[in-house]
View 1 (cartoon, helix red, strand yellow):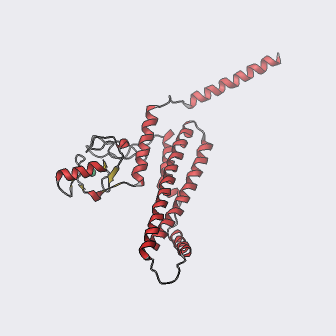
View 2 (cartoon, protein in one colour):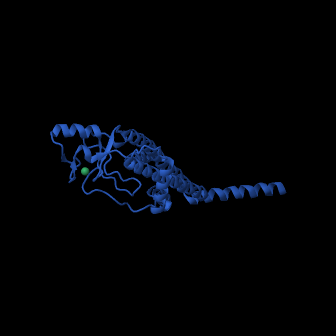
View 3 (cartoon, protein in one colour):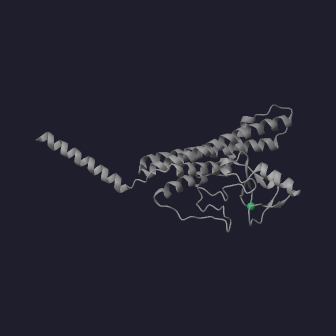
Length: 259
Ligand SMILES: [Zn+2]
């Protein structure tokens, strides 16, 4: 009985984690649209998008509290012969989490990524990050901080991997199959992380795939596509010049009508 309840709760948690991932991805898409709007100096639209991101972040926080409340039920549920009021337990737990961990949506990392990306449109940031002498290093800001862009074991681009995983400590990205084959080849459960110069140990349990990795790969794909179809930059001066022309045309036609 208890095992059945735990399994059911775990299934709901998995589903809700999927929703959470979708919400995170949606903040990323809103960010990309906002970057376009900011480039066109449509600050009103950018502001609306920002409010949208904050709303999504609030939903994400509520969902996280719900997932954590489920976790409490999963760990502490005991069958005591009486029907259990799960809805009530969840409600109490959620309230507990939102009271004890109040989160300001503006502190959320997805909101910060949004804010920073919009800022960078007109105030290009100083590149941060990098990883010593690794040739694959992409020097960048927090928008785009995968430390390698191809898997050192399979040679495939990170954006082409079907089974991407990253090392939990050094964040080097690999193909999972590549990692498993590599560990078989070296006939060890653990070996040095195959990225050159990395001091970490690689084991099957030292790599994982999570929402953050998938989001970063998605971001990398977006940047690559945006880069390959880059539009010519339109400066504010060009737009201002166009507007002046339009005005003068209007004046001329008015004059023509007058005469
Ligand atoms: Zn590493």
